[in-house]
Image: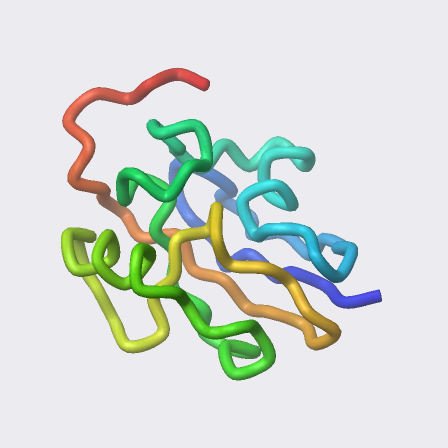
Length: 112
């Protein structure tokens, strides 16, 4: 079973976390079911950038992003070549190392 390794983030998971995931599960769902409250203002519909993450390892194991996700990512704060929207990034068979950026362009936390 693949693991999603969340790097330490002062707000969301100060100690970092190593979580077993099911292939086919999104990075956001893995985080949420383990108490890592990544913002997701559009209810996981690929209509915002608040769940932006950077995949530090395992990026090539995932299905590529589609055009809609790419268009949304263009608006993300701190965009990097290995950026994904965690609501769209699906875990495959390989472990992932995920960094949650410090900021989003969202000015108000939705409090999900």
